[in-house]
Image (cartoon, rainbow, N blue to C red; front, side, top):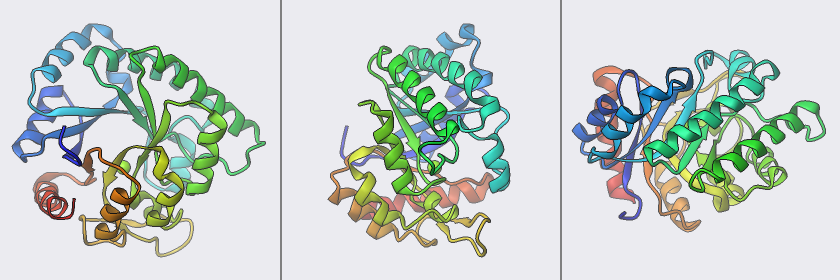
Length: 274
Ligand code: MG
């Protein structure tokens, strides 16, 4: 694969082929695919998905896993419903991720990724230890599935907290999917500086932009790539500095014609900067 190929984050709403056709129509060679886990636990659906994925020109570089009850409406809702951090969801979701690892193996995808929720800052808290143990269980299981790796989406906690968590999990196949805009949207720190700490743990990255929250405790606002406060030129330069050569996966979390226009412009911008 060429260095820093452009990629696109797409959601599977019906079939894998539909999602990848969208990527291909934009002239983008790679994709990360988000699957809502509960739609794909039925193994009888996997062979058709694998056939569509493996015969498609677009190369899939990661499987993102999302859960049916997740909502990103505001910070309290995210705390309550996203990922492995909420106690009420953890055990069941851990088991579901193991099934998705089997699905990824069937598809030939080597990287799984997810938001696991706001990792607690207190490393002695029972929730922190329980999330760490769940993460270890996932890493050990997926390693036995073609040595898969797991990428933690950045941004809901500080880079220091995430770095500490990766260290405490102590698994070689655990790293990050770095999203610079999330650091800004959640008010969790300067993304370029965060790469000094997390640069050695990059498995993949998102190219997304945004502006800081107006008030503490609220979410910032996503903007088209190059129009927010990430500083995309500095971001790409920093990725090169830390030795990252993987896909530059564009993420634009709106829909419709405007999304397609923004993605096309983001692609042009990245092709100039990479
Ligand atoms: Mg992202």
